[in-house]
Amino acid sequence: MYVWRKDLLSALETLSHAVSDMGASGYLLMSFLIFLSAFPPMIGYGTFQSLSGFTFGFAKGYPISYFSALFGAVACFIISRRYLKKRVQSTMAKYPNLEAVVKAVEKKGFKLFVLIRLSPYPFNLLNVLFAATDIPLSHFALGTALSLIKIGLHVYIGANLTSFAKHVLGGEDDLTESEKRAETVREIVIVIGSILATAVMVYVYFVAKRAVEEVKQESDESQAFLDPIGDDGNGDRDTTTEIEWQWKKLVSLMIGLNGTKVMKMIVWTIGLLD
Image (cartoon, rainbow, N blue to C red; front, side, top):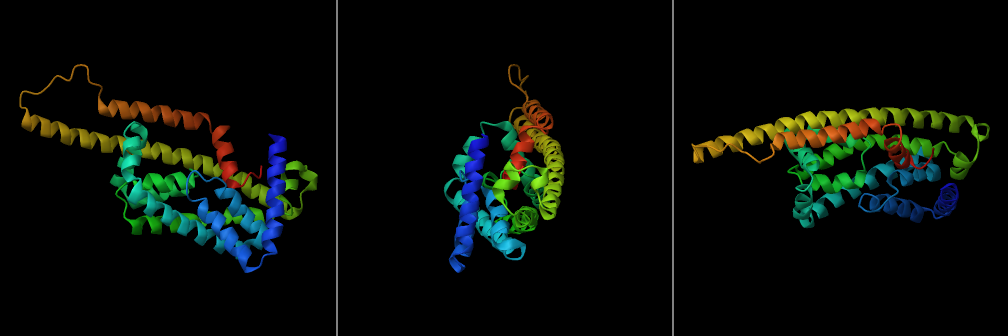
């Protein structure tokens, strides 16, 4: 793992030097890489954000990162809604917790959408997932634009590094003062991001539970109207109980993994800079 990361970061550093010497073509290439990272299964979204800051500095790297990610997200959303919506919906139907997220977003709308966007969940996967909801394109674009302000942290960290590889391979004494400040910012982002992700997960659980209960109540009322005699429901698993059980497992897992896998996921999106 150590050798793999060493080679990867050394390659990224070489790419950065090459891009910085390309002039206007370098800006276009970096924009294209960030744009592509908005589409799954492409990886490297956070890495390219930090690389943009490392290559061009914060003043130029931030607008490149911001608008490339925004245009990429909107393009992915439009394509996914046009060609993949039914497939994504059929896939979510197999997983009650994912379907509950859709119900929660459709119930709470724009506010919950922005909260989820601000949390450190996979950027490109959310572009596809939200395409399966009833969120208007205008709300998706505006909410994404607001949430993408956070990428300034990725760009800031990259802009304050003197070397991608040294940040991983070197010790604390090898870091400059600006790199130490960037390291402190990164650690704060990890903690805040982990707390926010868990809080949003818990909030979505309760919103989704209420949404499912409302749908179930409406369904029961319709069934009672069509079938006055009713049904004792023996052998059927309660829908609300199923959703609650699934979300309790997921929330417990998220809380239990905050110190390990969730942290690693957030660190990866910040740019493999731990």
